[in-house]
Image 1 (cartoon, helix red, strand yellow):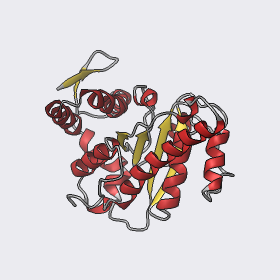
Image 2 (cartoon, helix red, strand yellow; image 1 turned 90 degrees about the horizontal axis):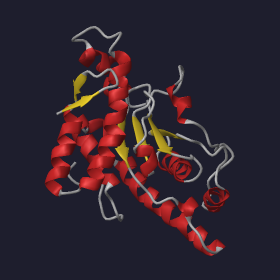
Image 3 (tube, one colour; image 1 turned 90 degrees about the vertical axis):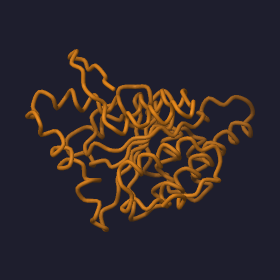
Length: 250
């Protein structure tokens, strides 16, 4: 299975993407298939195109192992995994996801959030909800995802899109070549109605994010191979409730 880059040169998609195509075609889940391919393949193609002019032929595999800390240093127990949550505006869902993972996985994870078209301010209802649940919201801000593609940015192990728009956009080349997954959640900022109805929309979004992130935080990341871990991340993105168990199939 091949894709064509901006240079017109055909490149072979990695095994993880080809495997996702086969799995989703067999299950008939074509909508999820399209979103998953966009969120994973677009970052991979951008990385290939940027490196193609400077990488000697035949050295791609060794370079990926050298540059990807999740592969190189996963045996180091004291080094936390860096996870970036992405959305369009970085004002609600991605902010809540950042807060949840930092609270559930201190020492194991370091979470960040960003947006492709940041609003510039965090949604007031998101801040009210997080404050009511005991989160310190003083450090949250709405920012561009380009901050995490600059020199000196944290080397990422995971990048999750939590809205469909961000999943379909061409993302920057992240330091660390992180594993990616789409965990779409309805946008509470688009909720209409009374204050109570809008507050309920934010609570529902928080609940969905918390369910998924709690399962992710409980995964035995250092003992899972890359293909198994990628499959688990996709399964979390397909969750509709909290019935899935992080230990299943471990």
